Length: 322
Ligand code: GLN
Image (cartoon, rainbow, N blue to C red; front, side, top):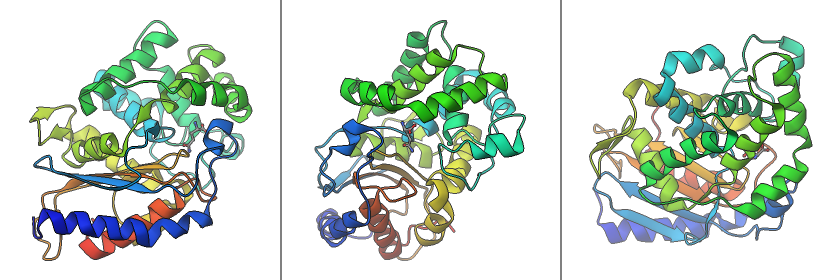
């Protein structure tokens, strides 16, 4: 590390303060009532380096649900089990330019597979493919994979699950489209259930930071020295994070932050900062993982304050990969 650990901590605390106010640029996800009632002013960040030092500032005790961050993790878990080729035969790696839950790409283009695993159509398709004879088994496969990554048991947020299940009319419609296009081998309701369950897994910014670090290290955990998945899977996961990870702000996020990241409508962001050994000003030359929580989301569905904070951090610490 270039600077002392206390200096890093102080800077993160200052940047949380600087960016808290940006929460007014968004609102909590109203279409999922349990998320809608969160306090929009929260903002927290956790960073972990390759030595396992954690730097956390702001509202970091809070647990929240993965939401769309789970899409990146299902993609990795499924690719690990069946191989990347199997997964890429069933879902593409093209951004759509439409909202994450849009039906338009489907209706207009009639693709022979969903455009990417980070839009809901692609995510529901690949969740349904998780190994296991029943929905419960498929969900448990993913859950165990995630528990291996974070190193502790994880739980479902039942309230968020119920809330989304009752209000998921659009996702249900999308799932019917998928069924009609023969992308779903299991029943619509079952596929939807697995997807909504994975979205409702509870995590902390610490957990997201650690998973981000493992992705940054191409599937290797530099702290425990465990290899969780292959370089080729990590590479495609990072490509997806850069091109589709922040929905329709992915281009802007790449330009102003430049870190592979995946967001969710709960206000979480998981970012993978790859090693960048040649940088002069880089604080985390050996790579890092970042977890952010800020439940007020912008129109694209990304944490408003969280995105602005990452912009500042990336600029100050020269974290962009580009
Ligand atoms: N569960 C959410 C949904 O399907 C996830 C979306 C998101 O985080 N962008 O609407």
